[in-house]
Length: 344
Length: 265
Image (cartoon, rainbow over all chains, first blue to last red; front, side):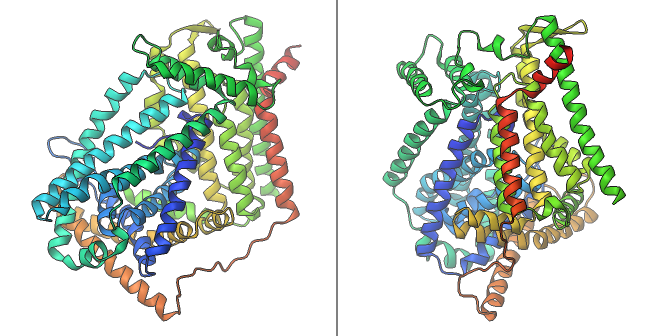
């Protein structure tokens, strides 16, 4: 479910980084305003708790495989969505660095997919309203379950969109969605049950944890629906703007993706204009005009052109020879440094 | 299984405290150059292969100069490869247009783009791993703070890092205890796991309370300070200029094709 660097284009990767950084900055500001300093160690230790809890795996009923707890909803319930988002972002950062889950460019996408959706959509728009009518164990279980499933579904869909917009994969939209959503529905259902169970367990054993952190804090104050929508709108506009600017460096993948997914009879009207305006912006802003970037602009036969030199035997031979020499040189440099260091 | 995961985490952390040329470079410089590297690699078009090869110079330099065991890094890359393979493997299946013949085999365009994805995958993942293996985690946090990442987030990262090992050890004890008392899949049912996680959670909250009290006892006022001051040196400046120059060169000029042309004539 972690997005990977290799499947991203720079445009998509940097755009989601921008969105994620904006969210981190906003949440940090909110925390500074409302937080008492007691939250600092609590957030840190709960981040470590998410790692620890993910180690305790459980069997998924009726199948042989095992699952573990995703923390978005639990953290939001305990800490409120802003602090929870910061904690999740930190957990994913550590995962990206130490476990190499996804990579550094994809980290922006991953924080977005696994942080924004559970904390600000699933929790704020589903869990909270459902529980606000009275927090009986049954209602909490139901709310946690539904919000867990929805959060993960949105995240999975987001992965599909990011892959598609990047245009590195050949998977058509329909197939990819049909692969991702059911798999994550299964995971989401299990996670939802686990989340519901843990929340109810803590609530029955130590209800004061909820009272001290959840309801009494202004931190968890409800964010209105309108604010969320305005935020999403701004994010969308930003995304569009950034995307088209960055797209100039690499129009190939983006256009391919748009064509491939919407280029069928049921093409929505506005995509045409997006594609053409992208092209216009790209023409006017492309930097290093004579070089490789702009060469890809020729969309008539981008596939043939970008392929390994060509079908032409002489050219492909030079490609193979060049590649072996480059790999050989790189390895030689590495080994000789190693050898020299050993001698010293 | 996660005994090894835990061991890996600690091992990677230990590697980052070595003292080599690469380790001594300022964290800010390494963070920035890693990012440039990744963006340059990812910006290659879908069917690029030869142009990506020179970029392997960077991980090789980091491995050699930083005294990082190659096998360890390769193993970690392999462990996380399934998602990229899963998505990438559809390219050969869906895009069968033949492009070139290598020794009698016809290679389709799909395989070319799949190979490109896997090359990019190994380059970007090794960049992330080598960054952490040659820069300590607190070093990266310091760099982030200097690069204007909000303080609350940086503080959160530092706290998480501090307690990660403590809590993972605690979870490891719990799982070991469970494994000793159960056989096969027993004891792993959701109804047994929920109380385990619940108790771990409550212990965690109590720990946070104790940590906070200890911090107060040491006159915590809500601010965090870094004890290790970093200063940019001439070497750092030269390093960033050299790496930026090389990255740009490799991105703009297809060095592989050029060398191939020269040798063949």
